Length: 95
Image (cartoon, rainbow, N blue to C red):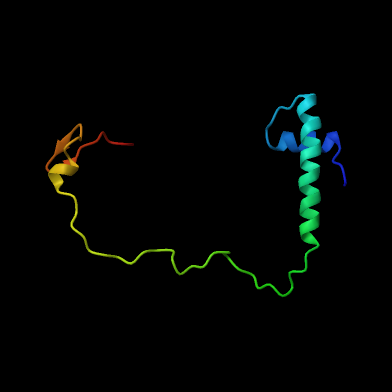
């Protein structure tokens, strides 16, 4: 296991805009080193026969088919609106 130095942990914390005390630096030193070792292990896997993909999930169920259905009546949609004008929600302008 290759161990990150405390200076490297401090640099990472600086880049992430984190203030760490000495105890946290020591804790993250071990945790970050373990993560990097795991990534190194993953890089050793032979993936030559695996085609590149953009998703690990099948894309055949991404969207449901469109279906025409009755919509909510305007009166019901506006029933709890704090302000209504000409059958629409009335809101303050956002500039």
